[in-house]
Length: 407
Ligand code: PLP
Image (cartoon, rainbow, N blue to C red):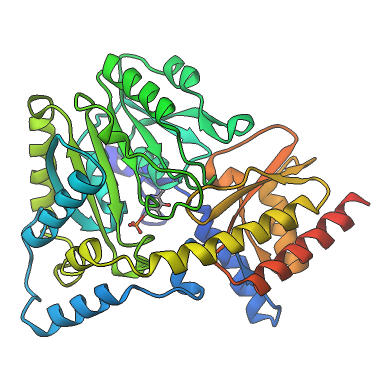
């Protein structure tokens, strides 16, 4: 028997071992939901962070620019790192509005997701490790699993408004730690990190030669307080900041995101070169939709006040409803459109969410889907994008479910 025959099963085409643990609970919960819906049950979806599923629509600037590009001969490949007009706008926005002054380069991708994948793939080797928050956005762990790299989870502290526990983060660093992921504003908690906390993370990264992967995809969706871009705080820190059109411009389906590298040129040169090589190997991001980037970034942002107004009202309604349900509590989100809700006396939040869906038709994502586990306590994430009537009905059903469960 050859090695190949003993290593792989003979009765099927064996899938890759590195992908065995890849999960994305945010979408996996919809499988059961669709089955129940097909069987005639009314289902309320509070799981997916897609504004277009609810009463939000891609901004007009993006629609006009993409239609123009489609009919003006922009259907060929674009440059691999990105359309020059788009890259100029991205760099200008990062520098002049966000205050990132030491930009080494920028690149576009099919969503921030592709940019994150490229940034990690260009960085790590098997045996390395990367620091991720818990709760986390599951994409990062999925990519690391595929790359054969260990995720080490630092705590976000619920008792301190879900701020990163930087002492815990520091305790996880060893000689093979390559990067720390910071998601700010945060998914799933909606937290925004204060400047002092960001400075502590920067100091830790600088002391240990870590790259900071700084995910700011919700950076314009600020409901309360102020957001400071981490990369603007220290010109010596090596940072890739991710952003895109999915959330702030309400267009996740157009798959347009970017990464901005900042820090000392001499420290980032080889790494940036590697990213550029990988970008060439995958040709380019959607040419058509890159034409939307500049009009969005340089447009009036006139959609934002209305969007933020709706989100604040919907968040406040959710917080009021949660406060009225015994056993539930939630740190009010300051940014994004998510809330991470705590449920007392739950051993298995995946089961809790499944039972809720089957009993009441409400779809939420279990805390364990964000790699968050606390003994005896469950969590679930909601999106507060649906209108007030849907949110109100959903929480009434959650209240009934909890009441029945507690008896
Ligand atoms: N980063 C975070 C924290 C997210 O929540 C999401 C999507 O939900 C992404 C990245 C992916 O963004 P994109 O749609 O641009 O790929």
